[in-house]
Image (cartoon, rainbow, N blue to C red; front, side, top):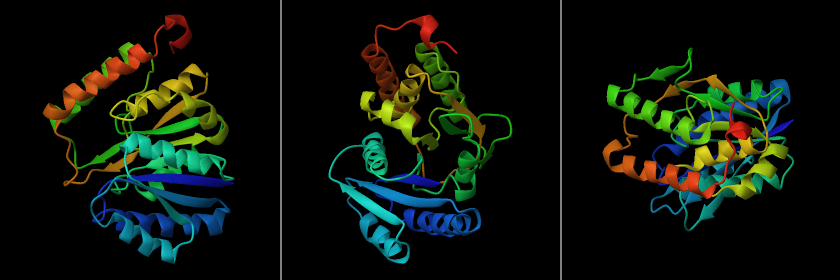
Length: 248
């Protein structure tokens, strides 16, 4: 069995090195003990720092690390391009994880262990049993819950954390879902999950361990309107819809 781990990277020269190091060590041990092969596809998207130099250094030490260097596009676009490359290979499972190390390799491996019987697994910071360090501030939790409520209202997908940057899918399901992705910005994760829903694929959600980086901050006041606009746009792009067809 083989898994492809897509890692989008935008100006990550300070953080991606430790992430690649920890993932390489962990999955090398898994490969030897449990015979699960892997590859890490770093998708460098329109950076202006030395991310590519850092990635090349770690690639020299691990031939299972390779990269794409895109000249444009955001995070969603980078993930899709990484998916398309992974689909050309022999991996039975394909997922993505953020480059900042918020999701440890052990936490990502939990997704692999949980995929039996389903077509995809997504990590959640809001299910019972999840550990988030440090504890998020009240306004971030409030904004996240409001955003999640709107997602459920518009798309009838009953997950607690669609935005967590750690997800894993079976190859055959992903092949069918990604051609219909409509957005690559804030609503990318919702669009991806929604396409699985429309194709009657099953996704499960599991609690995760998330170690938020104190230098990884989202300005909720400036980003909020754009995020809401993307949701409305995505809903309109998917009209007409049947309530009975898509409801859990």
